[in-house]
Image (cartoon, helix red, strand yellow):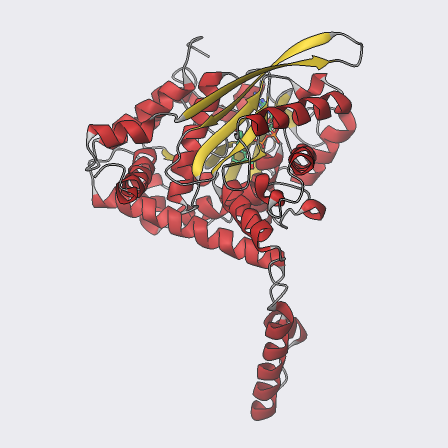
Length: 472
Ligand code: NAD
């Protein structure tokens, strides 16, 4: 990075201020929207497997209480710091507002490289962190609901739930204290791939906009698009997979240890399995290695999807990026300097705070499932199938013709949980894409899509505060 002391929260504030001038809110309200409402710093000891003691540094930030509970993932990474967690919490507030998820923004972080700890040590850290959150009322189905983020997944969420439930005996809604849980522990089907699927739905919608594609010099639609993805974790893997399934060509993939490319396209699952078997993405049969993993970001392509960590494209490498469109699957992958460069070059940046909202959207569905204590589709699936069978029977009888078997299966099918979750996510991402694009079109002075997204978010949070009567 060009700047060692780069502030991620500062970058979020900068983007916020850039957008605030296109809204009608006075500085007091804007200040209240912008600030972090509560920052909890935690230190606790860990007894390591070798008997030594280590002090663990952790955070939970609640950026906004304009709606409760607060919502946001927990990150395990060596680089975690207060500034980063504050920035990520703020992004959650704006993200939830844009996709109409009724939560305030929150985020958690533990400063550890999870690869350097055993499963038992990670379990102890996660459970102790949860206990610390409970002590200060920083977790609960109605107060603050964590989820997975970089370095965490279903396993950690199950530990959090178990710790919370053990300390809240008889709390009937306890399962709603955390989302991203395994399905057997109250998770919802479709959560695992939700962020990547949301990235795909959002970018597909932009690719279907004729005027935008014309401006960028691309054809309409996803099919045939050349895509590069950085990060083959939860978000990157699923984003790449959904693009591949829709007929796009994933020509470049970057991981921590290196990056590869192939003009013929890379098979995502094959690369994933190769990495699992060899411990590295490099030397994938039929593909070429890049010299450095960062080189993949500068590859000739239509859509670049950074899906690893923040600040990977800055003022230094942005001028060398050749993509026509950048989909921010990670949180904060571009610095404000990179933003300015892309705006000048006419490269469209589809911003993180709405594009990666699939995770929180489906987390919302999971939370609703937990509070209603019933699986989606359980009540209507059979009824819908019976009704559809009856309608089909009537059509066949009246027309004297038979419907083809594959069509019959499609028409008869009553919704499973995953169908409803995907459909709710698709609707959410399409609506949000149009809302942001319309805000942008409504004011030609708004310089880019990120600023338009902030304008939408600020207006919604501002209205919410105003309607709460906090600012009479
Ligand atoms: P993950 O831990 O599952 O995967 C991240 C991957 O990035 C890992 O495989 C890691 O090795 C790789 N990586 C790290 N540094 C890299 C580098 N320099 N070059 C290439 N690859 C690198 O994490 P995730 O959950 O997929 O999160 C990725 C990003 O998406 C984060 O910014 C996170 O905040 C954001 N996000 C995640 C979710 C979610 O639901 N998990 C939701 C919204 C946003």
